[in-house]
Amino acid sequence: LSRGDLTTRTGLPHGPGELGQLAAAFDDMAESLEKHQTQQRLEEELRRQNEALAEENRRVQEVNQLKSEFVSLVSHELRTPLTAISGYLDLLTEAPGAQSTAKQQELLGIVQRNTERLVKLIDDLLDLSHIESGKVELRATAVDLVALITEGGWDLIVNTHFLPAEVVAALRTSGATHLPQLTVTTDFDTHRM
Image 1 (cartoon, helix red, strand yellow):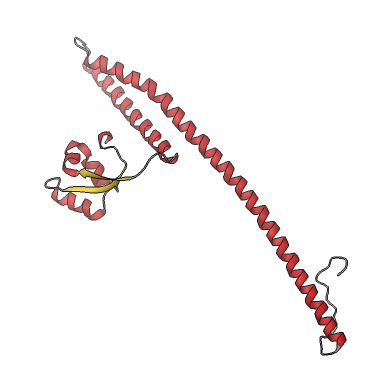
Image 2 (cartoon, one colour; image 1 turned 180 degrees about the vertical axis):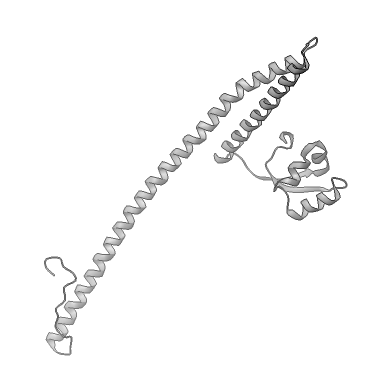
């Protein structure tokens, strides 16, 4: 025991006599020291694991922050040239006296649709970046479903999870007529649908 081996016991029988009581006390003390040493080792291991987890968590948060900054930067950098492309396409297709062949109109239409698709994708990336940064708050908003549906949001409403399934089922059977205003928890922009 003096050399640090806390598993050592006297090996003497415990009994009512003085030697038996002394052996029992010694063995109890050795067992208590062994348990204490084991608990200290476990606590130290737990402390090391907690430190490792805290460091790993810090690294994950740092990488996540860098990813969010990257997505935001790339989105903004892509949006600028796409805005210019979209403006020039509008000039080419809508300018007075613009004359282009049917094939050119078809190709310009393809470019315009792809540009709009990329702008929407970039908007979604920016929305994701705002959500991850905690800049988006959910709020209860009264939504006029009839106006929303007639403005082109029908597919979005019946094909997503903004509304409970029973409301969507009722909408599919009755259509968009005679719908009341409904308060929903939302953060989506009805103008971007």
